[in-house]
Image (cartoon, rainbow, N blue to C red; front, side, top):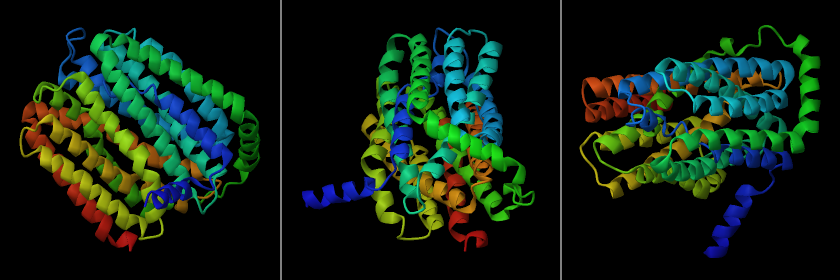
Length: 402
């Protein structure tokens, strides 16, 4: 039994390229400093800052708006100059802006710098997604993206857990550490991927003038419908890391380390199980069907929260539940969009996919914060859960995907 389990893990990680592993290591280092965004609501509503939940939601809205613009520009630049140049610039720019953001105190200055930071940071995503597609083979595409997600989530686990402990003593250190990990990731990318990345960039420049004008992501109606559903789903999913953390703090009276641990648990479960599950499921059923089940499980998380107060052990179990839904949905969402793109327009497809998540970061936390302030957290979770349930049914039964 043990040998069989070890063999499954070995097979799940076998056959991935050296560059794919390097990209994942760089992503791991970068995301290990992910401390500011998970605790932004708590930081804004802390006694030191004194802002309301609605004002914190406004800052999250600025973050999402910057992400939306950054994703669009990142995709355009990736198709024009190459993924290496865009990734390196985004990492360096993000480092500087994290350090600046930690010095801001007024709502206006925090909002402006947050917008610029998210713009620069999000330009990284379509470039990174395009780089993974460049370095992997068709056969291991889903696992290559899952490895990258593993790095993101392991970094998230480290960042959330340590961020919860650090925030207990000083929120200011979160900004310095987040910026430093961006800077370190940029150095590693320059040391190990600059030669291959520059060659890919030259290829992009030479091919940019011959991209077919009619071969645009905005003419792919199936993909556009898919993006609408992804946007609705991500609006729901993001509540776990924004409004839910305030709910756990203010109404459930969990401590920052407890909240940090539940968010870290999300990353740890992904690290332990996602690659093996993807390896087993990638040829088991159509990606859309697996996505639908994942979205439905995420809906269940919010519907259970809407029932009433919970103990901390229940919050831990719910964190595991929503992570299972994420594991089923997100890797196969990546597989869907990459399968519909081509080498010359992959940045554009990646950008639109990233923009869906950026839109969710803009409107999801903002609307839920307003709804929670106007009604209650429990009613908010009910609405979020029902929206997610409808989205799952649309993924499963819409004619566009049959």
